[in-house]
Amino acid sequence: MRILVTGAAGFIGSHLAEALLRRGDTVVGLDNFNDYYPPERKRANAGVLSSYDRFAMREVDLRDEGSVAEVVAGGHFDAVAHLAAMAGVRYSIPRAKLYTDVNIRGTVNVLEAARLSGVAHIVFASTSSVYGATEHLPFHEDDPLGKPLASYPASKIAGELMGYTYHNLFGLSFTAVRFFSVYGERGRPDMMPYIITDSVANGKTFRLFDAGEMFRDWTYVGDVVKGVVAALDRPLGYERVNLGRGQPVRMADFVDLVENLVGKPAQMETPPAPASEPKTTYADVTKARELLDYDPQVTVQEGMARFWAWYQASFLA
Image (cartoon, rainbow, N blue to C red; front, side, top):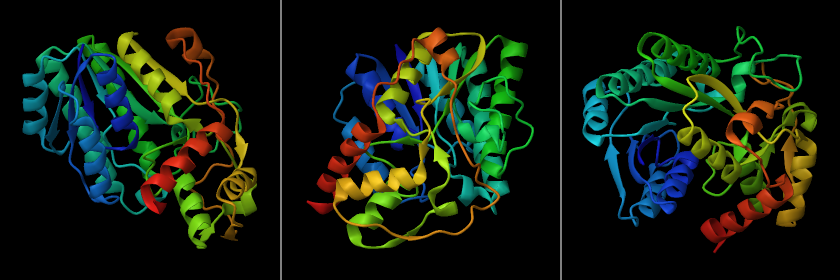
């Protein structure tokens, strides 16, 4: 297959592109290498991908409609994995315009380019944050999504809705995969696994909301990538599918796990959680198992051991 991966220099995108290349696909990556976190980390991820003969990277911003259209039109793609976005719930709070421009308008640019170029199938990276502060546990794909807690999940809900519009009007197959607290090697420095690990390793203080009495459905990046690859291989018309582990972890216990791996105590502040943070994330993965044969295998203990090994090799060697 020939596949376009937007956001290919990012955390999940680089793992996805590499998995596709390893199985023999031809991959074009699209990324703008922005400075939301240090661009040199993204350059390093892209460097890993550039070692494959069947990979090419295009440095393009999603907001540049003409350049996005040019990349899609020239690629003769069988499918698009649209992972590029402005990420981060808390970062989005004062930046609604930026998240609208990149995540909504940029997604429409990708959808329109796919329509005009005859690309039949798109897999769209959504988020567990679309569920907001629902009290319905576990989160099911048919739960109502009318109360997002910040601009980031609101923009992802809009992307899912635009995907349905293009499916309804133009027959485009669109699968929204909702990621749940993904972690692993190459993890972003703004994400809690990295923040906690880096802080414990270096004796720095970090914030743990509600004294760790919150729960997150930590999902190893390798398991998530298998789900995305399966979604690329199986056009389903229009679907929304949770990709989580289905085993929420208490954040205080997650910190204990990191302390044991690093061999040092954590130094924490424990303020109340802000209004942008749900108490729990918890994926019902029944649909993913049925439609994608999704079967997450990596426990949080094993996955964080892999993350710690990567962190040591990358930053402590």
